Length: 254
Length: 372
Image (cartoon, rainbow over all chains, first blue to last red):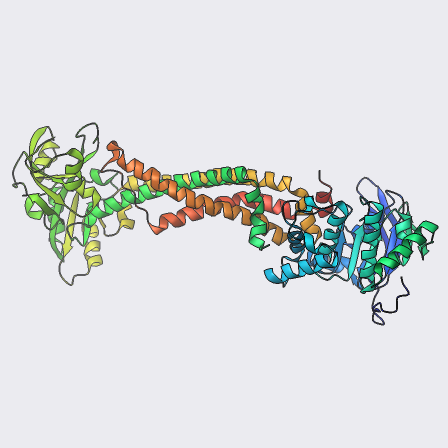
C-alpha cells in the first residue's frame, strides 16, 4: 500500500505529523503507563500500534489527541508542541479526528446529525454542515442511512458513522482507538480498507489495535509492551495478514 | 440539525421532567408577578386618589403608616392655603368601614359638595348631597353595582341610615368603589373634627410647582408633598413595607426556583456525562458546553415565564372577584410586570444552571467517556 504512486507526498521539509519525544505517563498512585516513548509518524503515513491489553497504546493515542497530558516529554502534532497550544478544544476539533472502540454516537439523533455535531462552532452554516455530513456519509457508504437512528444500524455501520464524524473538519491526522474491537472480521476488513483510502488521500492514520492481522495492513507497525515501544519498522506479514492485505488491495482498487 | 434543536432535544426527549421544571419556574413567576401587580395596583389606586381633582400635588402627614392614618388639622390646612403660589386647596378625609361581610374594608371619602367637581367627581345619576346633611351620601358606580344600590336606596354606614342621593364616577377604580359623604359628617362620626387626611393643592397659573412644594415642606415640616406614585412612600410607610415584602418574596422565589432548576439540571448533566465527554473529546469548547446547558435553562425560563404570567392573570383576576377584596385589590399589569417575570425566570435559570453548566464544561473527556 505504501508504494502507491498516486498518494500525495508531504511537502519537503514538513515536520512529522506526530512526534513523541521521551514521553512518560504516570497516573496518581504511582501507576506508570508509558516510559520514555519516542515515536515519529510521517505525514501521510498509516501506522498501527499494537500490543497486549494494558500496555499503554490507548494512553499514547490519548496523549496525541490532547485528551491527556504527558507526565514527561514532548508530544508534537504537525510540528506543534501540544503543551504550548492554548486552545486544545480547537486543536481537537480541527486538527485531529478521533474514532473510539465504542462508536459513542448519540442515540436519539439521526446519523447525519451525529456527524453534524462535530461541526458546530466552525465556519459552516446549517446548510453547509448538512451537505458536508451527507458527503462524508456517502464516502463511508452510508448515504442511504442518513436519516436513521444509530440504534437502527449494525456495529460496523455505526463505526463508519463515527469515522465520518471524525473527518467532518478535514483533520490531517486520524486517531483510531481499537475501532474494530467490536466488529466481525468482514466489518473490520472494510474498516481497514477505509483507513487505507484515507491514507491514500494524504491523511496520517494512527491506529491502535491488538489484532496483528489487521495491524499488518498498515505501512508500519509499532509494538508496545509494558509502556515501551519494543519494535519499530514495517510489519511482519504472516499468512493471514497477507491474505487480508490482498483483500484490502482488491477493495481499495478504483 | 439546527444548533438550537440540538440544544433543546434533551428537554423535548424528557417531557415529564421538562414540564415539571417549567411548572416550578412558572409557579415562582406567578407568585412574583401576582405580588408585583397587586402592589403596583395598590400604588396605582393610591396614586390615582392623590391625583384626582386636577390637583398639582397632594399634601399628607409625613411618615404616616398609611394614607388613611394621615391627619392634617384645620390650622395646617389654612397654612398650606396661605403659601404663596397656592391657588386653591381641597381637604378630604378618608376612612374605612365594614359595610357588610362581603365588604369588610369599604372606603368612605368625606368631602364638601362644593369641592366635588375639583376633586374630579362626575355625578352620573341623581345629585350631590347637601353640605351639612347628616344622612346623605353618594356611591361610586362600582360600589353601587357591588352593593346592588341606586339613587334613593338606603345605605347603612357610620351608624346611620343614609339616603343615596347620587351615583358618581371619578375615573379610577379606588374612588369608584367608595362612597362620599359631607366632610363634617365623616369628621363627626370619627370624632376628628376639622381633620383631613389629604389636602389637594392647585397652584397659581405659571407658579413653579416644585418651589411651592418646597415652601410648604419648609414651613410645615410635619407634612410632605406627593406629586408622583414614586413619592408615595413619603406618606404611606405600609406601601414601602409592601414593596419591600414583594422584593423579598422575589428574591426568595428566585433562590428556591434556582435550587429546583439547579438540582434538575445537575441530574441531567450526570445522566449525560458520556455525551458531554464525547462533545469535549471531538472539540467542543468549554464555553460551548456552558452555552448548551444554559440554553436548556433559558428555554425553560421562557416557557415558565409565559405560563407563569398566564397563571398570574388568572389568579389575580380570581382574587379581584373575591367579595372581601372587591374595591380594595386592583391588579395593574404593566410592562414592568412582564419584565419582572422574565428577569425572575432568567435569574432562576442563570443562578440554578450555572453550576451544572460549569461542572459539565470541566468534565475530563476521558473520564466522562468511561462513565457508566
